[in-house]
Length: 155
Image (cartoon, rainbow, N blue to C red):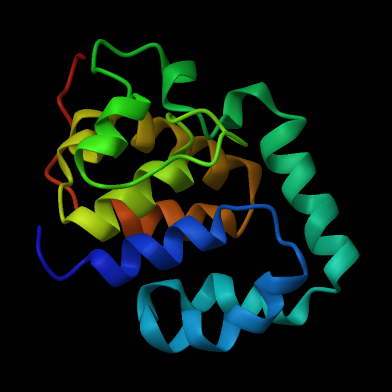
């Protein structure tokens, strides 16, 4: 799905732990990906320690909010390091290759959204759980899911 590369790259950054560099990127993220403005504005107004604590609360303390595709136990294949290498990309080794921000970055760099589309059911489930939890991170998933074909019902 051409044209969503910038959104996917920005969404990947939004779903990473908000380190010191994250704040410096917020104005660029806000302008480059208007779909993420609500999240970027929230992140800009939230004190750094509070934002980091919220990230941990949402993604690390809640197993139902996993950013790892393999946690969703779908029939769809999960990415491997070979997939990244086949596109001329390398994984850092800090996170497994099924880490959603890494998958989004791969889609951004290659234009290949098949892996995201294959995991649409899991992305929708994560999105609904984040929405129910009341976190602004749900808007990031809203934006990503809006670019993908409809979910496979019953998968």
